[in-house]
Length: 332
Image (spheres, rainbow, N blue to C red):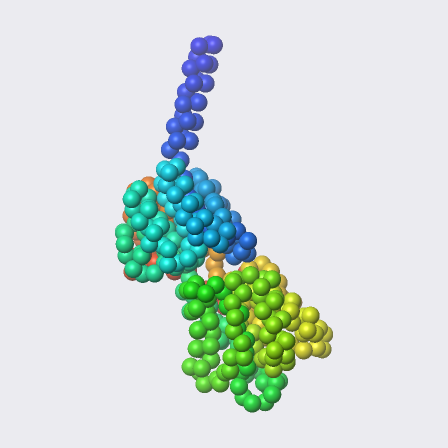
């Protein structure tokens, strides 16, 4: 009986070692941890990895491309079977792809879209994200509806929407397209607009508050709309507006729009300080990224039969935005 028990114990240990050795490990490089949306994505990625029984090794690039490159080198040195990369600088994606190609490690980019030429370098490279122009258009739709319903929104009575815009990181496709399409919807539909000020707050709430305070100092109550590329910057702008006497009962109001539908963003809609946002589906993007990494790591090509999401043009997995406002925020 003792011999049998020993044999069984050894067998269990060997099985555990084999199981551990065969587990897929994904190296997931995050642009920066101190971002509300990316934190939500990271949590959902871990949940999907747990569901699929794969390991994920997350690293924080701390908004530095050199740090991100070093983290990716470490993943490849460790022999991880797939990479999930949220690029710090989209222009550096070709370097990452060449590193991955050299070691034959498939790579799924997410949230920061590489240039098309980079994605075309290899057939084991994909991008998971959302079409930023959709969220920009949703901001324009929300502003148009508010302007039409509230004649008092035209503070100086000139028929022109005087606005400020707080943007994300320069060169980031989401920042550029959200900024462009929010205003494009208005001009395409006959609204006159005037940009009083525009500046980057790098997706950051505190920087957003500082930028809005600067805009208020220069333009005061002439500002009739505030477009922000994400909820964090919009929340910062709201804090600056509150300090200037906005959003008090019976006090001044200006429509503020964000993107992402983060938990704090949705709360701002409920309390009436944010007019609208749009759901940037962190869960959907996270699940698609990990599921795709797992397929590729196992040597499979994603198809309609084995992959839960639609692939466009052989490279792209687009997760649609959803407009969120006071009428439907409770659904989310």
